[in-house]
Length: 67
Image (cartoon, rainbow, N blue to C red):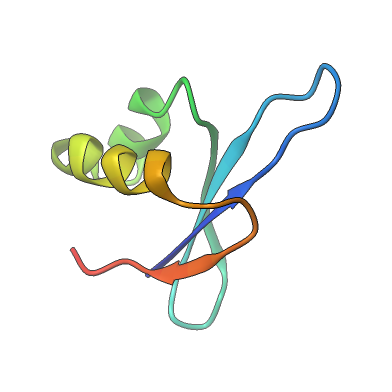
């Protein structure tokens, strides 16, 4: 799985994308509201791990996420 942090502009907030090995979009959620989306795709128990990485991640960089 891959994680990408997307910079928002003006009134559009920052977002996080989670993509699988084929780069298919699995989840797309606001940085400040990950709970509902991550729980929905079965990663509710990994929210703290994912958000710690996401907060340190620079915008536009693709990082492989090992869970």
